[in-house]
Amino acid sequence: MAVIGIDLGTTNSLASVWKDSRPVIIRNSLGSILTPSVVGVDEDNNVVVGEVARERLISHPDKTVSEFKRSMGTKKTFSVGDNSFTPEQLSSLVLNKIKEDAEAFLGDEITEAVISVPAYFDDCRRSATKQAAEMSGLKVERLINEPSAAALAYMQKHGFEDGTYMVIDFGGGTLDVSMIDSFDSVMEILAVAGNNQLGGKDFNAAVYTYFLKENGLDEDSLTAEQKASIYKSAEACKIALSDIPMSIMSVNIADKSYTLNLDNNSLIKIAHEVFEKIGEPIKRVLRDSHMNINEVKDIILVGGSCKMPIVAAYIERLTGRKPCTDIDPDTAIAVGAGIFAGMKDRNKDFKDVILTDICPFSLGTAVQDSRTMERIMDFIIQRNSMLPTSKMHDYYAASDNQTKVRVTVYQGESIIPENNIKLGELVIECPPTPLHEYIASLRLTYDINGILVVDVTANDKKTYSKVILSESNTMSEEELAKCKEQLNRLRLAAPDDEKYKLLIARAERIIEETLSFERKIITEALMDYKACLANGNERDIRLTTKRFARFLDQAEGIDTGINDDEDNNIEY
Ligand code: ADP
Ligand code: MG
Image (cartoon, rainbow, N blue to C red; front, side, top):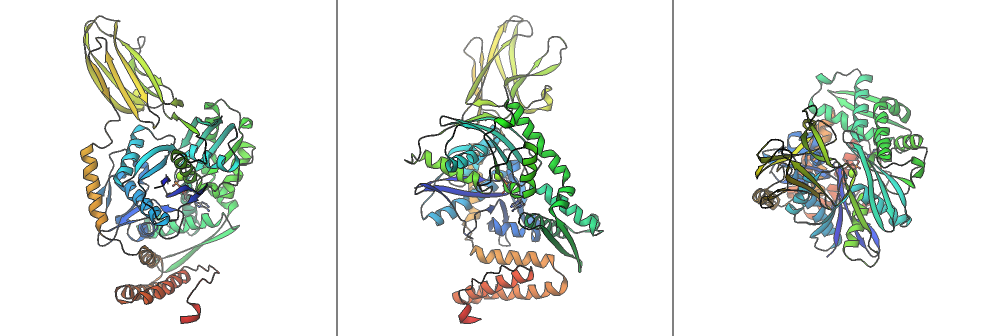
């Protein structure tokens, strides 16, 4: 039974496995590498995950959700049709799809996984990720930081050479920059910095806004579907510019066709604000790790947005260094997670590499400054400390005969406690203690998975408290069981063949996007197709599916130039 490595992304997820002495990327049930991290329900309240759900984002916005990874470990819930889901449940549905597709691909049962998480994920979001995995029937062998995974993929290819590497992960909605030091098979994260509000979606938004401006369209006069349709075209136009010098974006709105010609130079201009923000985390990570860019052995680019030549060129200009180009930005993290899973599987191909992690935020308590009497932060574990780490802090009585100590733990970098995130509070009883005398000790412990444990010991040694904080945003056992049950009920509804569903969802989206005449034709074709699915025999369905897919390609003006029709000589 193999252990797989999973990159559970905000935009896309994927998995890999170490097999026959090499990393193998797992293809999903549709034959694709990337599974969009999108979840929805269809008309029968069956869950749809991945490509099908992404297609339905436009046509069924109230029944489809994305970007829930951002809310992991919070109390936020997402309504999907008549259901309400936690971010953990939604992630578990994505994980379950990855698991089932991997089982089909490998022909083996999968019960364990190494899952990558952003290096800046705090304990709460890490616990939430573990719970999502548990709900999907996967035991988490280890949570691995995304940049460490990317560096592992790099080193598996280039050899495990000592040195310090910079990993720039520019995805759909986040930019994460990390410094990884590799020395004698120990990989250590030296520092992380990032912007969790910067990513591919900002380029999409820039193209979207430019499209509206150039076509004299007023956003307020557009329906939600029209906006979503323009947005989708904007993203496609941006992606096309990674391969061709100029791209034409064309959208039909209220029976009128609007177009925009875009090239990379114009994209640089309209998205200049995005570029201006790329440098900041790069500089910060160098400062935090006390390094000069010239000491960096290589720059590893990962994440879909690094596939943009203008992004790679910008980073090259900014750093004066040519980033490595032979690592696939889409798969590096999953491959690294798979390699790590291989190591954990005691694979003979590896001598064990030890991965060390860091704590991405400072942790501390609020104390009163004796001069100003202001409440300020006392940082106990500093940002970028290596994990596991455990730090003690002693408390002294602030008043005579003090019998209680209140410890409030905050996470963040601001000196003003209230500006940081309050993780939790603990009040303990102590014997009456005179002013300024030792009254209690606090110990903060971050384990290797970034899970935080807080211990407070009073001066009589008897009162000993041990609590895992995080404002209990994570679920209790009971809540977890309830969530699991809700998901199991949903999953029982047997999914139809995904390929058919994808075509239907795609047709529905195109219908949303097209003009009245075309719309009518596509609707007719869709109804014919649905009738065939309901009544046709296996062969009819297979042929009609091909024909319908080609019809939709034509409707969208896609010419693949590939004639892969196995039935070419028989029917057409
Ligand atoms: P995440 O880590 O957020 O799950 P990914 O690393 O998969 O995301 O990146 C997704 C982003 O990459 C999206 O914004 C998408 O538009 C963008 N993207 C993917 N492929 C390309 C490409 N070839 N050119 C430009 N952008 C791309
Ligand atoms: Mg990613």
